[in-house]
Image (cartoon, rainbow, N blue to C red; front, side, top):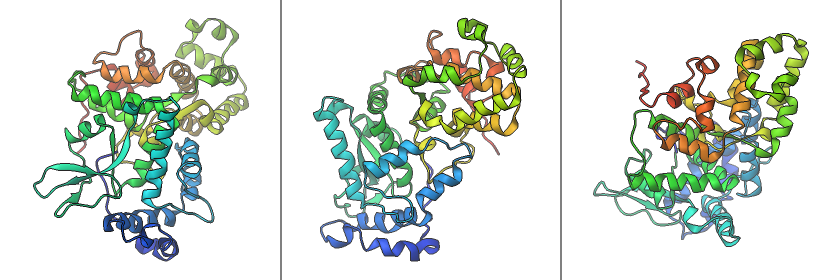
Length: 384
């Protein structure tokens, strides 16, 4: 869903390895499939196979991108991918059909309403310069071209209508959004409702809203409600802190950590690193995305809980570790609906746990998330 894309493929580097899979495409055996669909297969999916998704995951597992397992499980178990030594990427139309069936099953089972669904489309610009969209498998109109940067207000309009844009250039990233919707249908429901209200003018404009939206859709991490008791057992808290959370301050936490053996502190950090997926669920597209891993200067995407764990392990700084523990505690109190309300409201309601997460500058210093959620007038300085 990001709006700056590279069109450079990896065919030259990985063409020999990938070519063996190209002929297996369902598209190559069906003259009824439009040529642009075949092009997507031959350019985008060959490079996915070429870099070997599993290797990419393993390489970056300890670099702040810890929460990829739910994405890969969806790719393999629900969308027909096969990772590892014998990789396979399904045909585009097969992926889309599997996704649509998954969503239709949710509706049939009463788990979501049809009005909650977001379905994949390809955005195009017509010969008259207006914008439209295609379902995968539809013919590209004469003179039309694919859009790599989806402009407003068309972008918001199609999402409000239940359509989520795909791009040839960043399809691997877009898949991360779709697997997030599959993992957490409530996220999809709130996502679409947000854009319905946005198109209807029900969401107030304010200076930092675009930054908050970017975090919500690209970097969001939510806590697993079922793991709160386990989390409390593994965080390093004194008995008095457990009995009276009001005593948990940055200073008190740091003093308590200083009283503990270093190996005990290290064991806590390693536990949260190794078991991050059990405690947190990553829903933001860029935070899930394994192929297009980094976007220059987009700290709103990556400097969230996974990176705080990494930084604490790297620095072994007790002040940083104390901040991490308090952030995890506060983050665990925030529901998915709380995050959406924090973006809708210009001034985050003081009773919203999001406001309580960002009410202490000493906890965050000048972290980007603190700036955008604590100040609705925040505008980021553009780097020269």
